[in-house]
Length: 310
Image (cartoon, rainbow, N blue to C red; front, side, top):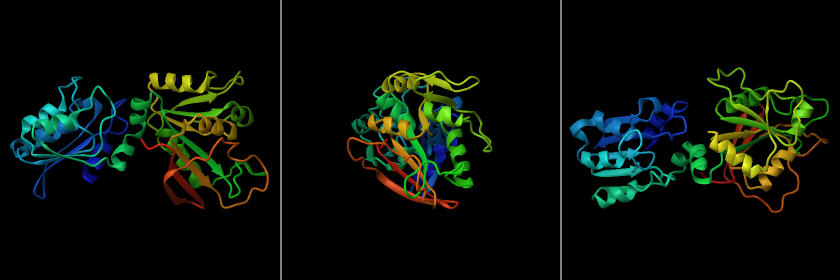
C-alpha cells in the first residue's frame, strides 16, 4: 500500500477535480503491475496496472489506494475490469465518498473476490481536499497562523513573527492550494499579495478576501461578502477544493465558530510577544485536534493537527 500511495502522488497537479489513485498488483513477493491515475491519460490506476500485469493478474493481489469505482464516466467501471481479470484479493486503502462511484467493495465481495478494507488515514488524507468537497460540498479548509509562544500574531517593531524558512513553506502551501484567503482587516492593514513566490509554482491560487468591502484601489483580490457557508459552497461549485486561510484573529475565529476549519497549521516562533493581538477570539466551546504533530522549521516549531478527519 505504501508503494500504491507513492504511485498515486505522480498524478498530483494533473488530475483536476478527480482523486489521486495508485494501484499495485502482487504475486507472492513480486510486483507484476503498477498504475496511477493521471487525468489526461484517462485510464484509471487499476486498469493501467492490470494491463501491465497481463495474464499474471489472475490470482494476484491488488493493492489500490481508493475503492474501485462502479460508475460509467470516461471509462467503464474499474470494478468490472478487476473482476474480469481474475484477481483473487483486493486490499483497499479508503472507501470512495462519492455516492455515484462508491460500492466497489460490495461488488467485489459479491463476485467472490476476497477484500481487505484498511480505511487508512494516509489514503484518506492523500485526497483530503477532494474527499471534503465531495462529502460536504465545500473546500477543505486549512487555517495557517504564525504566533509567538504567548499566542500573539503580531510583535511590536517586527514585520514578521515567523522565520524565513517558515515563510518559504507558506509559499509552498499557497502553490499547492486552489485558493488563499484573508479577512478585510488584514487587507487594510497589510495589503497582502497572497501569491506563491520563489517556489516555482506551476499556477497561482485564487486570492480572496472575506468580509465587507470595498477593496482598496488596485487590489487584485476577489471580495467574498456573503454568508460564510454560502461562499464556501459557491467556491466548491467553482472548482475550489482546497482553501488556505492566512487571515488574522477575526477570520480565524469566524471559521472556527462555523466549524469550517479542517486542519490547523500553527507556526510557533521562539519569542514572547508581550503585546499585540492574540491568535483567536472567544469560542463557544473547546475544540479538539487529532493526530497532532510537531516539526522544526528553521527556528520555529510547526504544530499540525486535524479538526475534522477527511
